[in-house]
Image (tube, rainbow, N blue to C red; front, side, top):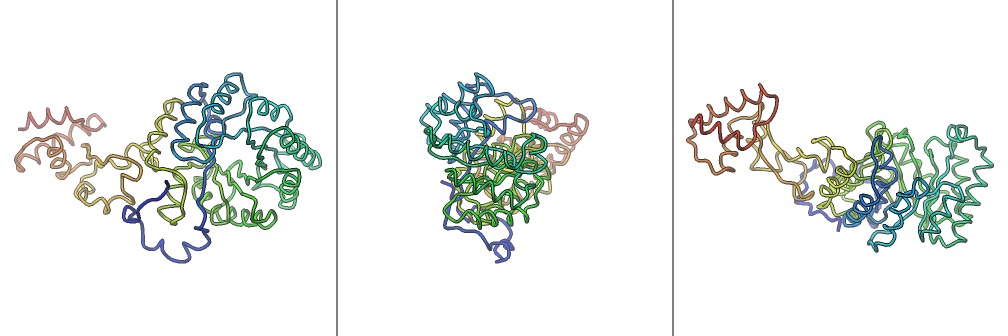
Length: 398
């Protein structure tokens, strides 16, 4: 799982330079913590049912994700049912819960039998001011919450410092160490509003590593407000992160979270870093989440976009027989189908390939007239020409 043959990757040779490849620990496999069911559902207008959450969790587990965040049971009775069912399903992924530094949140998971729990609190001055917390109160809540969780059956705790990237570094260090002293097993570095440049992410992860030590796992949780969630996740791995948190399709609050499939693809294809995901399942997982969330991703979205391997342009279609000339990685890596479509931008190569695909035998001297009709209709209707409509054009021009 997670290994792509290098002969299926057609990226730039410049990527092999030491200045590009340095800093990654390739002795470890980067793992993923999926938060689609909680942080992803914070996308405006998205509302998963308990049955949909269960189906999504099962599909994400099949994708090979190491950990799935089941949700926040105190949100609603339906969320409670969803968490309970996911916990009882026996999925291969570890099932983690989400809680604030609030005893009632933690107790809700304890009652459901959650074994692994992410516990959050804000550590930036801006967030603490918004919530009315002092630094002393934050430290007290962190210590009390982690101790309560560990004393009542929670086997592992991840301390999640909200708005880490805008926190005072000394105070972030103090809260991380307080959480670990109280019994937390790992920490998350969190770019809550996507406000940290990738270079700064790498620096921050390395700083956190310096004060918590090597044995403690570090998670990176980033958002996409500047379109840099994937780049920041890669920077976090270079800095020493062990886990990347994110969602399917990058869904989430505002501009969304890191898309775990995009991150996995980039780490493997551009940096030769091993990951745990089976990207051949990425597109089917994406479709399920889109259907449940009642939304559609852009056709040009990396990894899962409908049009990644669809060619309308005539100039590109002339190269269709050599995938390496027009694509950076093989379609089979993400279980996509390569195809030719017909529209305003098509050329004679499109006509020839489509005729062959449909088993239509038309003399080459008629291809130009067929192309003219395709371009005219496509321009007039502002859409592609479907196969049946194309058959009709061929019959008319014939």
